[in-house]
Length: 77
Image 1 (cartoon, rainbow, N blue to C red):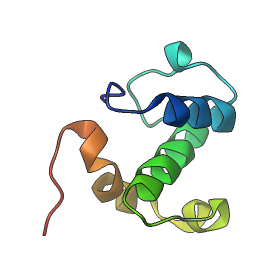
Image 2: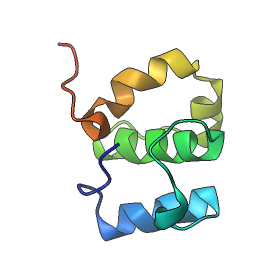
Image 3: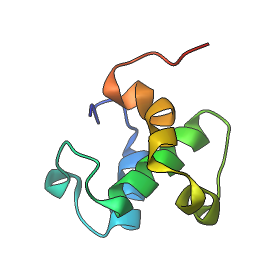
């Protein structure tokens, strides 16, 4: 994942939601807290604010499309 495009505020949100610093977050979706935080940030950036409860109810398979911008991919139209 490419975290270079996150704003400082988004990095802080990511760290706050995960309880770890950005340097401790590896390039994987293995940690549910990291996945939740990234979905929250990217959805908010796209004008689609989601509650933590809504994100927690998402199947992991649906997060790929939401997180495409962090993966350097374009979303299907």
